[in-house]
Structure formats: structure tokens, C-alpha cells
Length: 257
Image (tube, rainbow, N blue to C red; front, side):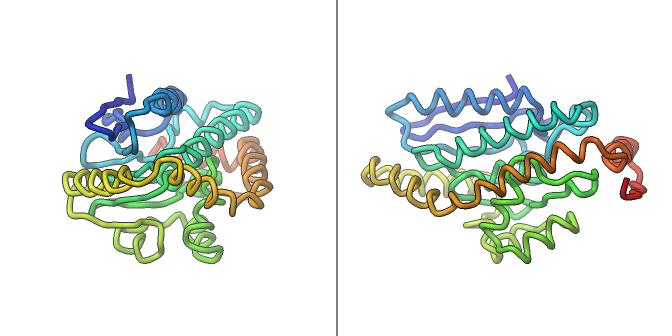
């Protein structure tokens, strides 16, 4: 198992456990995250969920580039749709979901964190959508959720440059709710926050999540455009160059082809 589910009191924790790959998302991890949330949704005793990554280096460092590099356009579209469905399921989850971001949250990891309702970051956290370095764009809803959180201009800047944000800057932009010194403090804050929310009316919390998310319903076309563009880019020479350069640990030479 690459995803560990644990329970303490009325709080469930999902830990992405693939430390040798900095907890990178592959199709197995995506499926296990879906199964974890599905199982937790059936637990009446759970009143809140924490999502985090194993270790101190990474929450989720991104997608598995080796796996991505071999996909066809059709497979890429299918993967993007799978990611969209999973992250929308998390965004719509009827119980509060807190992302405890420890270390790198890049690409799909940043998208996973943004799908959660609240984000707590450790001081060593780094956020970014560096897909442009591979000749790609974010494929799991990142173009839409980053824009919702930080605004159009800043989202475009971050996605086009591929730059990383530290925890402090992420908080100032509204990408992160709280910054803590270390993971243990993050766990304590997440548990304190979720315990407080657990004292409120559960049905009211569910309807709050539903109502807030309804305000972004007009963005559906944007999510569909992201899936189509993500798939199209898998047919380009720039994608082949970008992923090859990444695995060879060299700078990519893009030609716009």
C-alpha cells in the first residue's frame, strides 16, 4: 500500500507513503487515495480528515514523470479526467479536509493540496506548478483552483514561470491558511481545528462546503479546457523533450513543435 489510513478519535488521516519517490503521484496512488476517501465517507464517527505525506521532505512532489512520459494522448486525457474526478470528490467531500503540507507540494501535489478545504504548511513547504518545464500544463484542476485562490494574474505568473513559493509567500497570497514550524505543530493545529469544527452541526458543515463550492460552478468549462489541452500537449515534440530532459537531469531545449 502506498497510502496509509489511520483514525484517532473522530479524525481520520490519509498519509501518502512513497518516500523513495518523494510521495509522487502515480496511478496506484491516485486509486488508493480515492479508496481511502470512499472508506472514510462511510464512517459516521469521522468528523474531519487530514491529508499529508510521509516524512519531512515532501507532501507530494508531483506526478510520476516516468509514468507520464509513456502515455498516449488518449491515455493522458483519461488520466487527467481521473485526477479531476478524484480531486473534485475531495473538494466536495462532506466533511472538512485539511491538507498538512510538509516539504514539496509541486504539480499534482499542489493540486491535491488545493482540492482540500484548508491548507496548513510547515515552514519548509514549497508550492508550485512546474508542468511548463515538461512542455505540459497542470492536468488535475490546477489551472482553475490556483486562479480561484490567488487570482488570475498571479496564477498565470506562477504557472508560466514554474516558480516555487515558500510557505510564507503562499500564506500571503491566500494559497495557505496557516504556517507552522514543523509537522508535529501542523498535526496539533489540524487536530485542534477539526476538533473545533466537529463540535458544530455536521449537516451545516456539509451544506457550507456545498454552498461555497457552488459559487465556482461556472468554471466547469475551464476544467474541461484543461483536460483537452493537457491531452493535446502529449502529442508535441516539446513534451518528449521536456520529459526526456527531466529524466536526464538537463535543461530542456523547447522549439515550439
